[in-house]
Image (cartoon, rainbow, N blue to C red; front, side, top):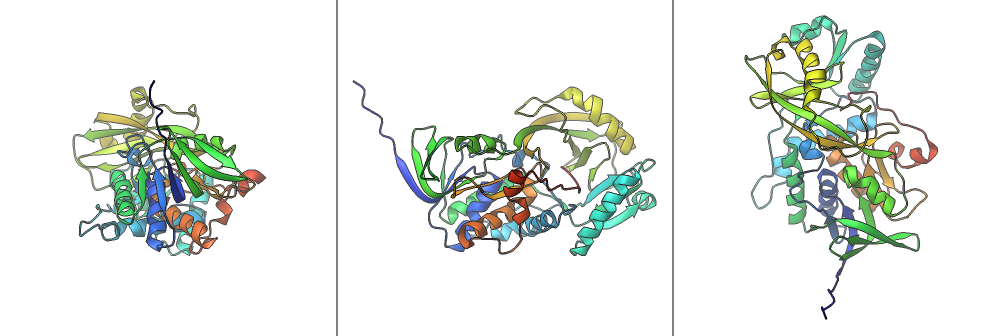
Length: 398
């Protein structure tokens, strides 16, 4: 007769489900306070091969229309610019170069120009030194761009992009150095009793009991919510990205968002291009749709930058957003009306990497101080889902 396999139950003060940019940033910010107790992060894949952040463009921008999003991205940019020092472990910096190539948001049509100008006024009102350019201003600044059908643009000279994989691993490494426990396993169920989330049940059969549970599992977050009966208007949205090279050379370009929806930026010797299309079926789709490049990407790229007409696609990949179908915006905080110790941060819809540091700090404030101490994210709580009141972001979408 086979011996019965003994299952273990670990204990933690705070359980974080998901260890990519959000989970590791939360763990880091909690641990830095010295007040959080035992922190456990449950993450099935320490390589983060399928996580959203490492498959993203790595952009960090302050081109939003909502003050909360501007302030979150500002804190994120500050952290990433000082990442090497902040994530130092035993004299080994945990950094990367913040490539301050800027962002350029091109707009066409009177309605879009009006929205862009209003957003620009919000940005500058918060001290963000972005520029509002007319067609001539874009042409004078960026000679390679075809401006014939462009009416205006917002240029953010101090925005840029980072190595997203290095950001995730940097937060993780520093969190571990600060005493955070990472468990390589998958949450398959959550035990609930007395109106509280009590234990995370793992695929291995082990359990982790905790006082507080935080769900930051990205595109898999809705599955975790379903385990406790919570519904969120968030679903996985596939996004294809392609890397290509051109024959000649052009000036250094900012990360540029075209009115067609295609965004591109420089990457080493070439460029990457991606597009978010909310009209495709939601759900996980790891396919790389190469036909999409010829039908959608190449015509838009070649039209906007004539030097892109003769390009060669080298590779493509697929990633997923945790897309908030209600309003494309963050949901953060306690499960209002549900389990009193179950918290979420989800629905970043392509802006997770830049918000990761601020979400980490905000969640730490909620859990340890009982409320926000720096950026007030009250409007982004689950209450608006209950009330059915979207909080629309009209700025640069991913």
